[in-house]
Every structure is written in structure tokens, then in C-alpha cells.
Image 1: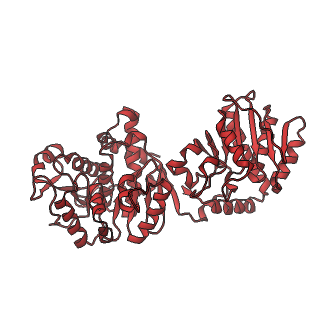
Image 2 (image 1 turned 180 degrees about the vertical axis):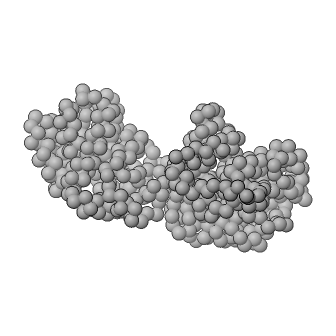
Length: 507
């Protein structure tokens, strides 16, 4: 699913109006009806509902919602802030609402006596929505803080007022509505996927207002939400005449003394996703544990008993992945340094491979073009933040990831609640699967195996990344359904990969 910018959505709105032969007011009525029906599905007509409407089209939505609720037996209290001038649609819905007769309607022109709000009340925020282009100022800041400080349940129409659709650098977080429920239209907005904005969004419901399908299809987007259907379309059936080499060979440099679990998890993840042959390179002392824990994999012993000291590919492999559990000893950093400066094909770098690079930042420029890196937030910050004191928000990480991906011509898998795959062409794929239980040791190692296992089978690296992230999350969801989020461990994700693939393929 495309995630559109605010500008793109306005374009789609205009094309819908033209294609459907309707007016902007008609489209507003569709939006208001969808919001009103969602409210009616949640609360009875006896519920006290207070609606705050701004002077723009978001206020017009709110006034139309009030009218529809009133027609259905609700008795909303409506406050319209007409401090400057009303948009045409807002003015029309103001007139329609007044014509209803005995509705509790207050028009605020200068002085405002706020209503008393309690925890049993529902407040509907229709102040500004997505129509805001600068931080809230003046009396609106006091109003937002008054609403936030009440214990009422807050419903935002379109967007919590004060929050921008994409980037919120420079916004005043004190002056943003903290919604318990956000009812948005057509698709989630980019800012909804950043952890620092979760307190403003609350529960999010995307309402269908029947925007023109052709307009949606032809409008370009840089951001995509990956869903089950997207992965289903890309999964290919197996040729009945293939052999293990047709399913690809993976060379996995992973593990060190006391960290061989990472190698096992990555290898098993690759095997379970369908890689034909996995060869693990690790410390010589790990031979027994690898052969007993992962008998389907080949093992190649390093000269050292405790860590990786050399990475020399003796055979041609479909894909090379390195990093899980290799540690950051000087010998291992030297081995990663030598590998990156001499291997020129795309590879996958994860975990300690990234930590090794962070200790020698100039190695970023030695990463082969087209490679994939899969950092969690800590690893990403070590690689790309300006200083130790430079704390990053999710928004800042994404901006830096977009820039770094283009600069180094690599794909960056920025792991988190909404894992984001950032490509050098500026496209960003946001994952929709997964759960908090997957924040557990070894989960990232499994993901390394899944992505590299898909690449080994011939899926393009660009596709393998977002496919692998979704499948990983979906397997985690199935595991959580069995064991609960609290009890989920990384091996559970591997054990559910087969079921995840079967479920994704099911129509």
C-alpha cells in the first residue's frame, strides 16, 4: 500500500472530485459520514460528546460529523473557532448545522469559556488536522493543552491537531493533541510510524472514503506499507526439477566463542526459508556445536578457536552474509576490514559486522555497492550519529538512513517496531507485521538468515529485504499466538516460518 504525502493526497482528492463528478463538499460529506459511523459504533447516543472545530476544512469535517450525529439522536456540544475566516466548506457546514435548530452550538470569535471536561467525556478534535503548515500559536496552544490536560477520551479527525503529516522537526510537542483514537483517511501518514509520535496518535483507524482508484494507482509515492498481499504476489512456486544448488548457496560468517547461538539461528533461518546449502564459517572450537545443532549446514573452521580472523571465500556462493555473533576483537575487525576492501559483490552485513565498521568508520566507504545492512537502532546510531551525545528520534534516523543509503549506494534495513527498508533510490518500505515479543535476543540473527536465504534462491536483493522482513514478522505473529508475546524466543520465529509461508500463500 502506498503511503502518500499530504500534497499527494490533496492531488488524489482533486482527481476524485473530477472523476466522480462531485464537489469538495461532497467528498467532505463522505469523510464526515465515515467518522460519524465509527463514533456511533463505539458510543451510544447518551454519551456526552464535545466537538472542537477549527476554521478550515478539518473544522468543516467536524461540523458535518456533528450534524450527522445529531440526525442519529446524539446531542453533541459544538465549538467553532471563527477567529479569522472560514473556508468555504466550513462555512457551508456551519450554516447546515445551525439550520438543524436546537443544537448546542457555540461560535468563538474572541473570548472563549471552555466547557468542563471529565474522564467520562469524548472530545472530538477537528481543529486543524492535516491543514496545518506551521506550529500552533496563540490561543490554540492553550486550547490544546486544556484538552490534553483533561481526562476525556480524545478522537482526532484526520490528524491530531499540531502534528504534521510527514516531518515534525521544529514542532512544539507541548502543543499537539494527544489523541486516544485517530480516524484518518485513505492511508496512514508517514509521521504515524515514528515511535516518538505514538503518544499523539493512540489507536489509528484508516477510513475508506472511496478515493478514485485510478488516481491512487497513478500517483507516485516514495513510501510503502508492506502487507501480506504484497509478499504473496512475489513468492514463486518451486520448480519440481530443482536441486539444492538451484535454491542457492549461502556463505555465513557468524559466531565466536560464547556466541555460536547467533550463527545457529541465522543458519536455521536461512535453511527454513529455503536456501539450498548453507556454509557457516566460525571459530574452530564451534565445529561440534554447529554439527550437532544444525546438521544440515556445512561448517568451515577459522584458524582461530575463539573468533573469526580471516574471511576468504574458497568457493563461489550465491550470497555472503556476515556479522551475527562474530564479536569485535581486533583480529575480527581486521578480517572484516580486509574482506570489505577486497570483496566487490553485494553482501549482507549485520550485527557485529556493523559494530566492527563503527570502530573504523572509514570502512563505510568500502562496503560493496548494492549491499544490505540491517542495523537495530543502537547499531545505526553508532554508525551514523554525529556524536555520542547526539540522541536520535525515529524521524531523524529515517532522514539519515535515506541520505546514507544514497551516499553509499546500499540498502538499509532500519529495524524497529515498524522496520523500514531504505533503498538508494529513496524508496522506503515500512513493515506491517510483527509484535513486541520479537524484541528478544537472536531475532535479528534469524532475520539475517531469512533475507540472505531469499537472495540465495534468486529473489532480487531489493525484493528479498522487504519480503524477508514481513515474513519474519508474520512468523513472529504466529509464534506469539501460540506462546504469547511475553514468552516468545527467536527459535519460535524459525519454527513458524513454514506456517507463515503457507499462510501468506493462502488466498
